[in-house]
Length: 113
Image (cartoon, rainbow, N blue to C red):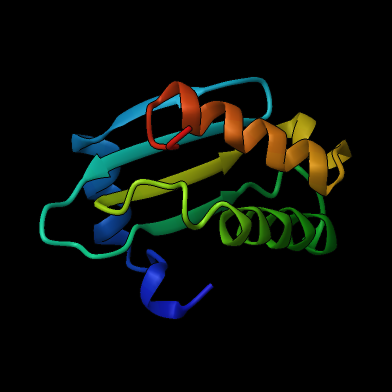
């Protein structure tokens, strides 16, 4: 995932939280906000310390980044997306996390079928 495609600043996160919409399932919560004039989607990842130690949190973020990389062509381009992992995500492997991500993205209509 290129750095230009990531949300990093607190102001960017807060804007998506305040003005965006959200959708969730048991493992993941996503917030998304349409940004006109943007040629590629941007993602921000949030994994709380309540989920586990640094190794567990970094593994979840790595899985999410890889899932977005594999779904790159299908994700709508003009959005800022924040993904928040919930506790059940710590016990999941890559394929389960990808399936869960595809579920929330398709329900929020950010994923082209």
